[in-house]
Length: 459
Image (cartoon, rainbow, N blue to C red; front, side):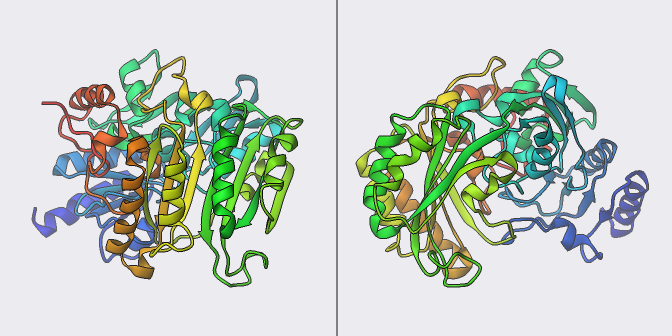
C-alpha cells in the first residue's frame, strides 16, 4: 500500500478511536509499546491505545482490511512473539473494576492489574484468584489459566470465569458465556489471545477475610536439605496450603535486607486460608536448617504480594517452564546443581506445588491442559548479563535433566522472544489442541490473531 494511502487510512482510524493511534517515529509510539518485559518490544505498523471495546473493534476491522496480524498487550509481562508490521492493540487504559458483593463477582477491564481487583474486593471480605505479583495483568494471566496464590484450594483462575466480552476476527463484540457460546467459552479460557481480544471479563471471588502466609530464607548451602523437605512436606499437606520454593542470588545493594545482600538463597513461600493450621504446618521449616530471614504470620490479602517479594519494575528476562508429574530426588538434584549457586549462568528458580483443586476439571470445563501435573518448574535469567544463547543453553540443560518427569508446559510461564507456535504441542493435550484448531478455523480462519503461541486453523 502506498505511503499516502496508508496515512489516510490511519487518519481515518484515528477519527473513529477515542484512544491514541500511533505509527513508528511518532511521539508516544515507543512509550505505548513499553511494558514489564524490557528486553523485547513489538514494532507494529500501527499501535492503538484502546479506551473502549468500540476502539478494539475499530482496530481489529482496520487490521483485517489491510490483511495484517493483530496482537494485544496489556501490562507487557507475557510478550513472547513479536509483531512487525501489523496492528498492536494496547488495552492498558481499560482498567475499570466493579465488584458485586451479593453475587461474589467482579467485572474487570482488559487492562486492569490484579492489585486493582484486590483493592476493590477486599473491603467486602472477598479475594480474586490472583497470583504472586499484584502488578500482573488480569486478562492475559486468566486466559492462559492463571495459577494463583491460593491455587491448590481454588483451582485455576480460568475455572472461575463467568463471562467474557471479546472482539473476534470479524470485528464483532460478543458476550460469551457457557450458555451463549459453549465452544468459544471453553476455548477462550486456556488458549489466551488466539481467539480474539478480550475487552472485559467477569470472575467469581472467594470469601477470604485473611490468610496465613509468608516465607523463610535459607543460605543456598542448605539447598539439599531444604529441597528434600519440600518434596516430603508437599506430599502430605492439605490442599488448603499452596507453597513454592525458589532460588535466587541477591546483589550486595542496600535495597535488599542486610541478611540477604550478596547471598545466594533458597526461599520457601506459603499461603493458606486455614489460619489455625497454618503455623503448625509451617513449623518444620523453622527446624530444617538455620534461617537467614523469616516473614510469617496472618495478613490481609492485600499484603499478599510481600510473600514472594517479586520485582515490580520493568526488566529484561528470558525463561520457560515445565510441568512435572512428580518430584523425585534425581530431579531436585538436577535443579539444584544446574540452576543453583554454582550454575554457569545466574538463574532464578521457582518450583511451585500444584495438585489439589488444580487437578480437578471445573463444572464448566475449559482448555487448560495437563491438570495431572503436581509441580511446575520455572527457570529465568537476565540475558543482558551473559547473552541469550548462553541463557537458553543453560536452561535447556535443566529441562533436559527433568525430562523423564515432564508432561507439558504452562502458557502462563513462557518468557522472552519465541517463534509462533514454538511450544504449541507442549502447551495443550493432543485432544485439546485438535479441538482448538477446529474452533480456530471457525472463529479465526485467516489466523488474524497469530502473534502468539499460535494455534493454527484446522485445514
